[in-house]
Length: 206
Image 1 (cartoon, helix red, strand yellow):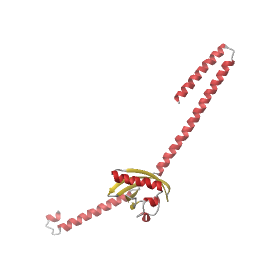
Image 2: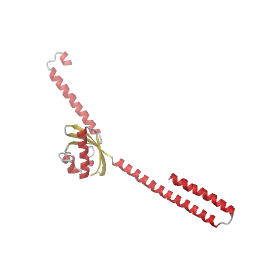
Image 3: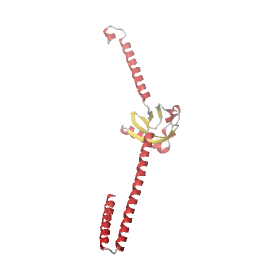
Image 4: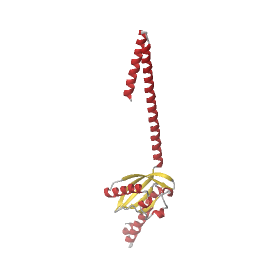
């Protein structure tokens, strides 16, 4: 517009150059964002063919990036895992909605767990942002393990408490049957009633 107001004969050329400059700036900006993302970004088609890949850590790729391009998910993943990921791609393309798929895969980094967020990219293409969730899975497994251990411990405690109550109840009954003293019998009967009340209450609490 400045050129136009000053009678510039190359107004259209100037406008084109500015548009191209803005496009280059936008591409650099977008590329810098992508480079800063720690997740794996994968572009595939409906058949699960790798069209483009970005990752800041090659050790989370099953094979070299260049070798992955052009291959299909079914060439890389175990059959069951590949079927799960392909199902997520197809659902995303068919519904237009975000799909979450978790899977396990052996990579140079080791046995890792991943979460893929799959969205349609246009046409038959799907974009997947894949995050390593191994640490989260390990933490969840550790919590489950601890909960399981606590449940086992609680069951053992409950079992011992019930056994102790039963033993006390049995001893009181035995003493009650063998004691000739009415006062002792009365005291034992009172104690027995209290123990039986505790047993009934404990059973209800369980």
